[in-house]
Length: 217
Image (cartoon, rainbow, N blue to C red; front, side, top):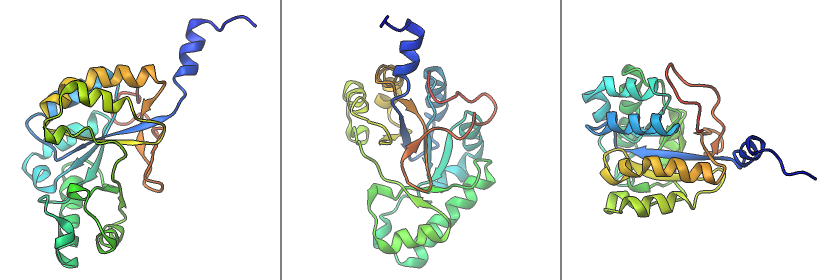
């Protein structure tokens, strides 16, 4: 059998699945550069925003959505949620829902608890607002000073459906974005959305808002 042409081989290699790139704690002063880097790399991501940051910079939330990113809930003030009572949990979640929606980021469907700390009470509080809790499969520890090389290496461990934890404010993560794009393409993986039913990365439902990339090259 003759070898497939190069374009056919490339198309076949690009069908190995989808992964979820996620960025916590935004929006921040580094968000514009992050969005630019993601756009240049042909990547889309889920932005787990804090409600207080969304209230402080609603235009940047809208910029995330307009760039084709999915905007999600990361609590209002980033407390250790499992140490709170149910009413305070719900306040942290509901205030963020309102802040993101008012800023033009849509109504979030996903919730990530700060520090990844959760319990049944918190999951129930999130579910009350129609939110699916999402943690992660790979943590490159950009929050702990990981180098760009270490972040890229961690991204290379992703497999179909998995999710990586990254942070909006990390300089080394921003530096790593172009290489993450290349690593994923070499593995035949694309950056997808996180399904609110399964909590896993899947194909994007559509092209996103104006100017949005299409989920990878």
